[in-house]
Length: 358
Image (tube, rainbow, N blue to C red; front, side):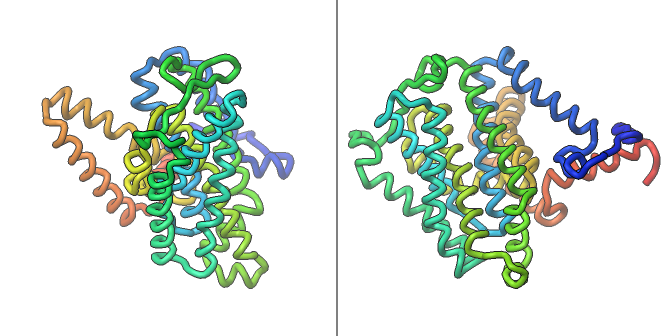
């Protein structure tokens, strides 16, 4: 009843196959975009941007990338942190080598460089899969962190071993550095989120997405019907690493400003993004956003309730967060393997018939 589908007809194949075939869904999507672009930038401050919005937007891009590889193509990866580090260090080298080039170009090129690295480390997926592939990507994670730690060229021979983002502007507005405005960094990251979501949605609904899902469901049967496993798996690694590289570049340049690879892009980062897509829902673009929002907002809510209201020690609240995330992962894997995205789909189906029984 909420949807009012009566009279909502499609008169062509493109109309029938669009992302939001129901008019109510399209209006809700346009409303969310309008609020995100024209309302939030004028109402937020530095606290809201740094504690919620920037982490959510950046992790959403990383979750979309990992979801393409794990959720759509079925290739388990534990190297997300390492690929984010590739994007961060590539962006840093480009920013210092070509200071006159726009940050938009730097971030996109950093994503392309990460895509190349992802294809290189995705080659073992042609011979191994499952647990063994997870171990191979985990080895890539450790190797990349070691590489950026041990080769001084990557951090421009800095004595501290850290990399710091120099001040850069986009259309005359500072995006990186200590003097940035909250709304500017938010809109800069939001632009990449919209870009990533649109590209990922169209890829997963097209020929590439069908090949990835065929490989995920049964790779031998997919090869028999004409799907090339080499191109399907490596294209999934390339697209996934491209988005993860963009998120790593934004995480370094816009959010943190200065990073040390072991601290910022360690194995914890890989598991964090993996937990996001497990809780949000594998094989779902919306699930990537839902999982990222959940794991970004959860620590803020726990701190607000546990520390500020109840007066608990911060270490107790930090351990409680780990317990809650672990319990939710177990619950979702047992009760609802498709995560929050499936719960949202079920809720929409019920709202379509409410208040009538079904």
